[in-house]
Length: 80
Image (cartoon, rainbow, N blue to C red; front, side, top):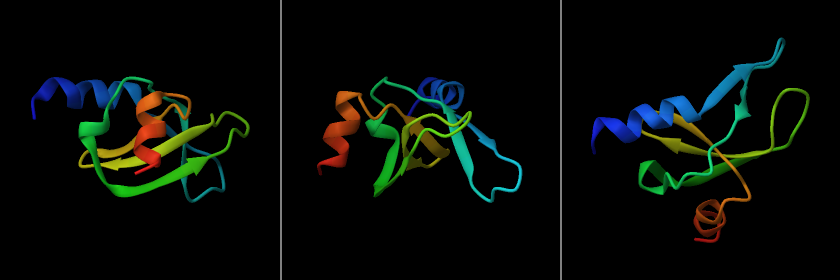
């Protein structure tokens, strides 16, 4: 792993905690193929609500990754 993908991952993922919420939500998603960064097979689907955007949330060794559900790599990863 090089430092560059990790820096990009941090820039392209954004979470923001809603007041009164225990869980952060994605406000920005990436369509860039970040599948090498994904750890494990578990993901979470997030619906668009308020400032939160529709997203598929994967775990990485650097935290959560907010991905665009329409991106082909995300569809491929979900079907595994």
